[in-house]
Image (cartoon, rainbow, N blue to C red; front, side, top):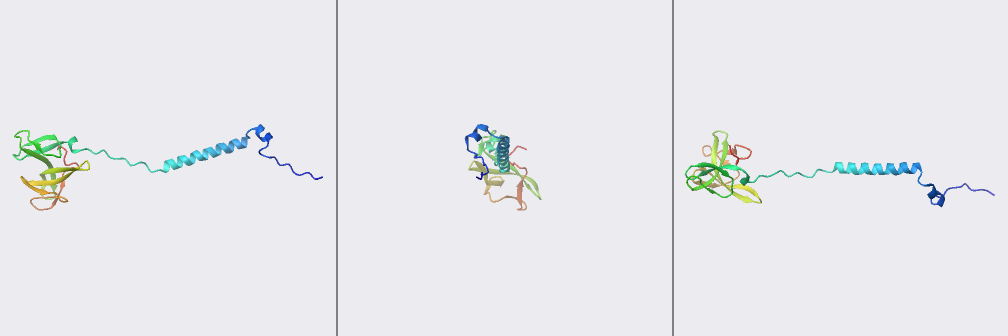
Length: 157
């Protein structure tokens, strides 16, 4: 009679009694290490969440104000006009703009708050004459577009 080669059944009782062999331990550790490495690579390749810059509101700044009688004073910024500290006349925010030809010019502005952001709605280059704000403020002498004199035109100079 011919004997067949013996093959061990991996699920027989003898295999369970022997426990896990060193080769199986190495395979398990290698599989876990590869899994951890893949998770770390995936995590590192994810884009960082966008950071939102801190936005200061106009009332967080000490701003220049000018009343209709010409008095200039410092007070917290506001979307609404203030009363002058000297004569109680209406005062508006004063902002410095620069013309490339004629230099720095102080301009009165009126604001409107929209979606928690302030936007300039009216400008006065000549005292008492208000114009609706378009894309830019124009120099009263040459008509060229002026730019704010600083990154934040409402801050104190």
